[in-house]
Image (cartoon, rainbow, N blue to C red):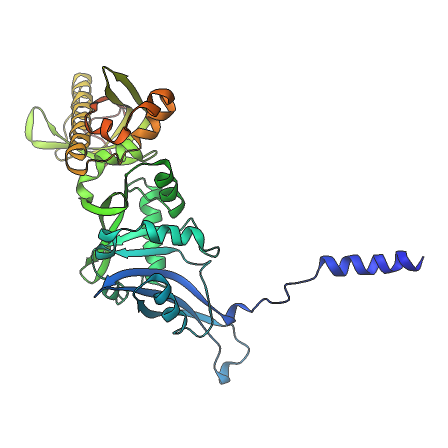
Length: 373
């Protein structure tokens, strides 16, 4: 009986035991964002930390508020810089809340793989955080004052999430990049931002080969890449009126179906991007009635425009980037595993034949002079 009574009281006590060495949240330095730069042969860290501020003496009992402050550290290596970083903060650093890791152009040109591996190895780093390339130095980036968010890191994260949700950018997290590198692919793209009119702005995509920055794709030139890589993307296409040079048609185009087909013939890789697109007319510059024949002509114009842009973009990548930033290699391996094992994909990609089979359907059939803008 005594043993049963002891078990009844002891077992619940063991189950509800807390962490004996835990610290209150206000006893940790919570990182929101981290910037990495390379200046004067030193690795520089800039971090945004949450500052919990207690109530004043006259407002005792009111809830705490939060703000952020920036810290700076540097060293010849990551380890030296981290020691310097830890010596500037009041409590132990907590990286589990970090949302964004920013790399300057200068650091990115030297290679970011070592830092990606560092994130992968440190247990408290989230692998779902976004890496971003910045045109300006970290010192300039973290000086920006914005009322759009609590912190620079949160503002950038929200901006990228909005672009990603609308499929107007390609936002890969650290886990995605590590997977691409592990697969053996030499190329990928990362969001690229910069300062414009004293505010942060999305500028396009940074191109990486062997995890080193090699080029920038301007935001206006990213559409062909989005048609290949982004899911459910919705892009705006402008088509001139074949019968009126002054008039133009603005369409919102989204992908209904997409399939990448690959083959190997006579030791040459063939890649075909198959797209089934749906288009909606947003407005005309000058309203005209549109006949069924005009609809078919506009569908053809849209299909040809997008097809040619995709082919030209991939050929330019073969010529200038000399690496596969489209994940075509992963598709080829899935479709032709044994052939993939026998070839050097990166070399095979450079000489691959590129085709685009685009079919566009204008799904809004109420195209007339009373079209609601």
